[in-house]
Amino acid sequence: MDAPTANGEPGDSAPRREALVRLRGVSKRYGQGAAAVQALEGIDLDIARGEMVALVGPSGSGKSTLMHVLGLLDRPSAGTYHLAGTDVTRLSRRAAARWRGTRVTFVFQGIHLLPSLTALRNVELPMVYARVPRTKRRERAGAALARVGLTALAGRLPSTTSGGQAQRIAIARAVAAGPELLLADEPTGALDRRSGRAVLRLFQELHRDLGLTVVVVTHDPYVAQHAGRIVQLEDGRIVADAPVQNPLVAAAEADDTTPPVAGTAASPRGGAA
Ligand SMILES: Nc1ncnc2c1ncn2[C@@H]1O[C@H](COP(=O)(O)OP(=O)(O)OP(=O)(O)O)[C@@H](O)[C@H]1O
Ligand SMILES: [Mg+2]
Image 1 (tube, rainbow, N blue to C red):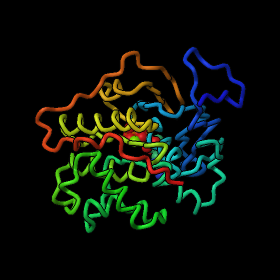
Image 2: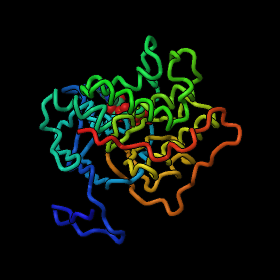
Image 3: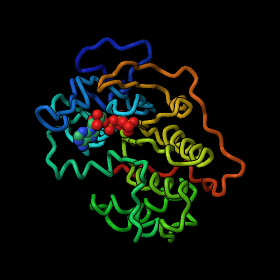
Image 4: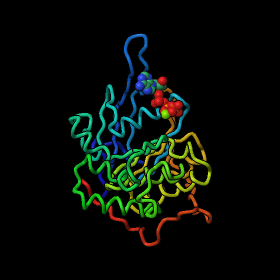
């Protein structure tokens, strides 16, 4: 669905899709007085539905801060953030918590699976918080594990999986509820090359097959070239924003131990509220 931008900005040459993310003048300051750090400064950013964006920039440039704002983990000090047309800076804490984990989800570098829960339970957890009924939760969690090729590990504890598998479980958890926006901060940073490529491939599949909007932070130019667009931050400001001419496609690895299960390509989005 094409929606002309409400602010009447001229579209660029490509036909603009509806903006899922719209930031205007977003700033974020940590601390006060002499110790204050201006982590973001006047960020204007539109991300259309179905885009895959790489966010790059030197250490300390504000990438994680921007991701926290996008992921409703933190509020900007100034500026507006419209997500799917809603000014989410005005959501109550409870409403923001409901959006988080269902409509907007996060894959962290540190993974953060709960060690006492099986893979399946970990994948279900955000839907527990979002009060998705149990049967539906189970069904979606199972479909998400199938999508990342880890049905066989559903009953395992995270401590008994490899780092790459744990990252894929975390991705299953992030997408199980059918989110609109998937945010990933250095998702391949701690992985070896092969596991990293499997994760990249998953992101590309989710983006392509489900039309998921993906923002991925990376230090790795090779990883960034898999996105359709690269946004570069420096000192809390956007200093470059350009499409990738021919995005790389992460190929399947012949020796990937647990390839995605055949026939799961059309796992339902679920349409969580
Ligand atoms: N909770 C916080 N309190 C105070 N300052 C913070 C906080 N989080 C981040 N900062 C500061 O804000 C700036 C941006 O940090 P941010 O974590 O967003 O950078 P980054 O681009 O993600 O860096 P890296 O590539 O190292 O992860 C840095 O100067 C950092 O020290
Ligand atoms: Mg960071």
